[in-house]
Length: 179
Image 1 (tube, rainbow, N blue to C red):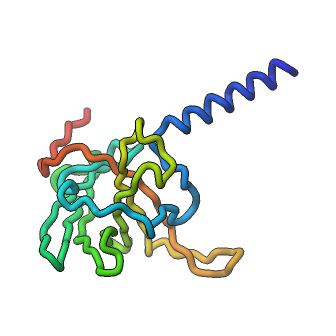
Image 2: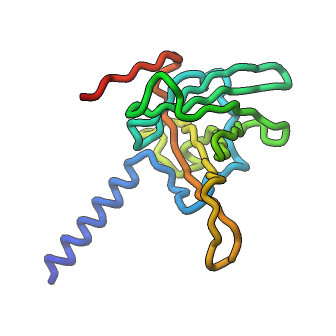
């Protein structure tokens, strides 16, 4: 019995240390979990390029700044699935910032509402030595997934939180052919 308890406690300690060494935010949960009231300034000078979704090697997101004046900032966002096509985006839209949330880019496409922002790793309780000082995050609210919450009897929608990692500043997308 002592050996079983020791093995279980070592296993739990290993899982815990592995979770602390990954670049996933500690503010996890269901729904929109990022602290949207405290984003870093949006990285307009660094956003353009190809990004990947952490933990998903198939999805590539292309961000391209299409307008940046003193009063208007717009971003073109295209989603590609390497398994489907690297030529035609599976989804695209134009993101914008509003005067009341100047550090959050919002976008609507294919019945989904997106929010993109940059956060410091300290805000998300992540290790800056492992993950860098800042991370780009996204929240996707799927308006096509309406359901009624049985406890509150309110309408709800599927909500997905993503962390993004920049691959390159280039806008050229190349995919390897799969056999």
